[in-house]
Length: 121
Image 1 (tube, rainbow, N blue to C red):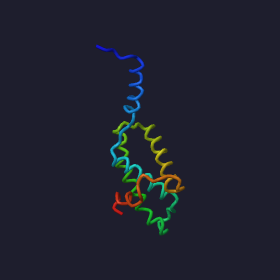
Image 2 (cartoon, helix red, strand yellow):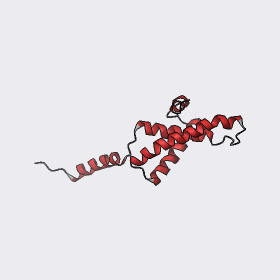
Image 3 (cartoon, one colour):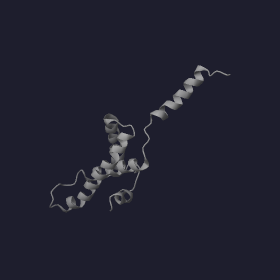
Image 4 (cartoon, rainbow, N blue to C red):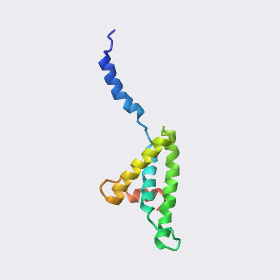
């Protein structure tokens, strides 16, 4: 019976470990998280004065952000994220969303229409 050589085993482990450590998310949770963050970024500078017309219009997206994140976060936690990795993921997604929708230097993962449809808009 042939024996595996140490370099072969090490090469296999080097390829297998990153895949095993990667956290697999259902596509819907990833989408809900991304869109929830997008609505959060989109509405963070909107006035909070209830008499302000922009604030009233933005409230739909503030509540939508909350809803989408409340749906996604438990799934992320069930998928192996802990508090620290979830915080890092949130920072990373917030940075990517900001580049895509605020500065225009990135490509959004989802369109405004796709995200809006998730909250009935």
